[in-house]
Structures are given as C-alpha cells and as structure tokens.
Image 1 (tube, rainbow, N blue to C red):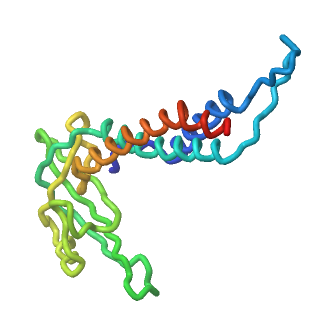
Image 2: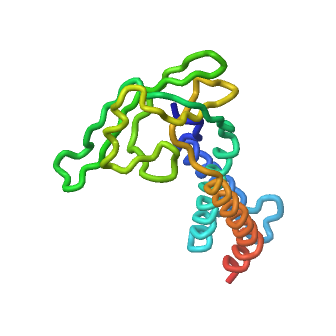
Length: 197
C-alpha cells in the first residue's frame, strides 16, 4: 500500500486559494479622487508583475507540499518478507522497448502477526534493496523469493517494497526555504517597485 500522500487536487486548491488571497490583497486599488468615504475601488490590470507573483507562489507551494508529505510520512522499519505470487507483463505491446509492470503479492511477519500485501508498478533497477535489472525480474516469480519489506510501526499492515531515501526530503526542504524567501522578497519589495514603474 502506498504511503500517505497529499492529493494533487488539494495542491491545486491550495495554489488557487493563495492566488485568490494575493489578488484580493493587491488587486483592489483605491483611487484618491477626493471622494472621501465614497472612494471607488477599481481592479488593477493583471499584468506581468502579477503573473510573476502567481508563478512564484505556485512554484513555492509544490516543494513545500512535497516536503510536508515526506515529513509526515511514517518512519518505516524493515523486516524480511517473501513472495506469495507475482505477475510480470509488458505495458505497451507495440512499443519497441516495452516497460515491464510487476504485480507482486508478498507476506511478512511483525510481532508474530503475518501480513499480506500487494504492490504494483515498474520495478526499480536501482535505489532499493529489492532492485533488480530487467533481465532478472523472473526471479520474483519464484515462490518464497526473499524481499525486504518496509512497514509502518504504528500500523504494521501498511508496508512498502521501495521507499525513497532522505535525499529527496533535503532537496524539497532546501527548495522550499529558497522559494519561500524569494516569494516574500518579491511580494514585499519587487512587486511594488515593478508595479509602480
């Protein structure tokens, strides 16, 4: 089963909400025309300064979302598992280099309780203790073939066969800090200066 992800639609909603809040804050400009309390508010034109701000906000939200997803993900532990059954088939039969999709059912035991899960996807060649080159995937069809299983200690029924290392979390964290800084700097300094040119 896959680890908890923040759905893409939620990222889109968050981006849209941030854009609306930013436009509400900057999009209405009071014209000082001597009307006192009856001043008319008019929408400013949506130009390059606004487009740059929105692009920067959206670009910031993506790594922040991915970073928070990795931070909130379970701290997996590993245990020995074994293949119950495995199906290997090509995903594109007409392609010159067909990608091979693997559907594998595996079992593992945590604290004396046996769990059975299924994993489906493109089997990695590197970056996982279970990685295999394409010409050796048939080994997965051997019953009781050994696997390394990563499980959530809070809920051992949730498991993965391939998890990313902490490098991605550091990359997303660094991008988040840099882009957040740029977004704040632009909205506080760059946007007003560009808008008033």
